[in-house]
Amino acid sequence: MDHRSRGGSNNAQTTGRHELRAVDPARKQRWVTVRDVAEMLSTTPRTVYRMIDSGELPGAKFGRSIRVPLDRLERWLEQKEQEATKENDYGKP
Image (cartoon, rainbow, N blue to C red; front, side, top):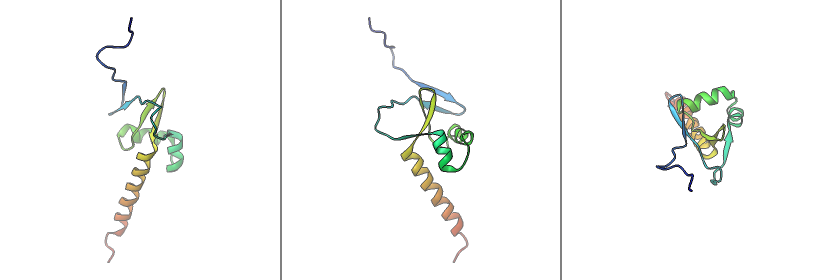
């Protein structure tokens, strides 16, 4: 007898306003822990969890832990750097 669920599995969990999806760890994408992200941003893991929950940073569930895709984090950092540069360039001749 086949014990797989019928009708498809959603594998999603809602935290706050955004949905975290369970991700297949076999995918060829690099993921970093919330603690690693906090160290990169010189902030606390709690702040990173808040950023993920608000949708500012992407996050995915790996078992009981949440990870951030490294490529998306790098793009987010580049975008923030560009925004800061634009803000600092206003009013300059």
